[in-house]
Length: 336
Image 1: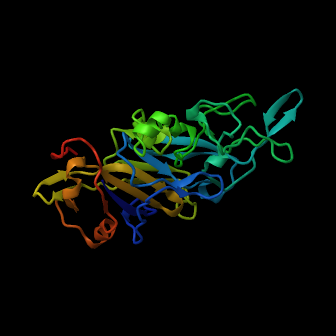
Image 2 (image 1 turned 30 degrees about the vertical axis):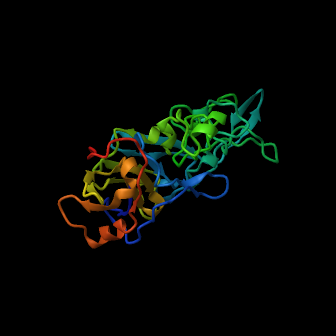
Image 3 (image 1 turned 90 degrees about the horizontal axis):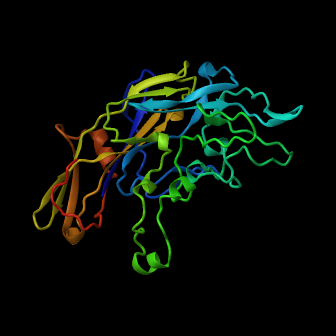
């Protein structure tokens, strides 16, 4: 398996360039702090069925002028995810019914799962469950705070509503949305499969982004990216920024000591948008079955198609990790 991570700076005029500081590959999950889940998941996981898009950041009021509600999110190619973001609200009693209070004005709101609907006491379908969310349990003063982030199409209107969680970040592997695909870990697995994953593990388990942010067919680079109200107003005053996802064609040549050479092309595994810092990271990934020849593996060399690597890309490829993936598949050349 080979993973390459490239970090790009997004310029306020919409141009994109390789960042002077390249973020390292993550060898494991990186906590976000508090109860907010993960900032990043590992970059070295198994192949995915789809490209994951993750957005780490905040919703920002256009021009820095306080608002009570706005729409925020992104679109990459044909894939989009937008949410309605409110200032702080709580349920208040009015005559014989409960109604949301007026939202407080805000300039910035963190787009974290703690601000979305949920709570570990709710009985919801696994795909909709958010253990760290709000909207169901009173605080110490008896107030039940409504979520700040909610679905554009399924807003909360009364206290009995149970909308799906709306979020943009990484879903931890132990949360129900992913755990439901994790397979069966029982005595049979322990006696016959451990430490390998169970045979009934669904590949969807490896998808780390919300379903709305999974791109079937994968991103290939060159897609137009539109960011709405997720950039700092001092950098992007109007709140809308467009740029193109960098298009890079990589080729991996894996050499074995028996003289065999196998050429593969990495695909875009994960795109991480971090608009607070005007930054986007792209993780390229390749997995080569070589079970019976793992001890003959010499090296994997990564190059950019049609032109030599410049110094900036050399810095990126300095963090390429190569490992053999155990598999009974053939070791012949694999298609891109």
